[in-house]
Image 1 (spheres, rainbow, N blue to C red):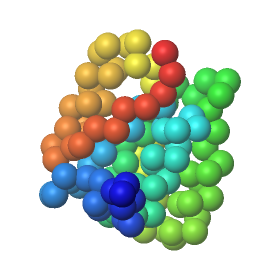
Image 2 (cartoon, one colour):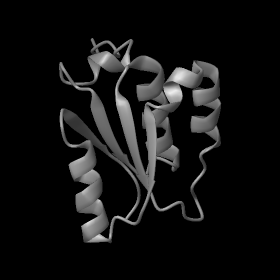
Image 3 (cartoon, rainbow, N blue to C red):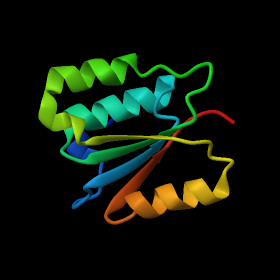
Length: 107
């Protein structure tokens, strides 16, 4: 028998998590992770993405519109390239208090 899928993003996060850092959050997988966390938790999402050729924020924008104005403050888009070590360190520091990381993206 296979384990049951979590019914809410709260079940995916460690207890007390209020911030989640998602890399590649404008991509296919990262965007799905960000949308799931926005709809299924009260965590603030720090979405790191360089917004390249395969990036698409349409799904996240639609989700935020459905959730209403209060959700806008829970999604922080940080446009940056992860190969920039200084900018990445600053983003991690900004999100690090109580943060669980969901790492996605492509190499």
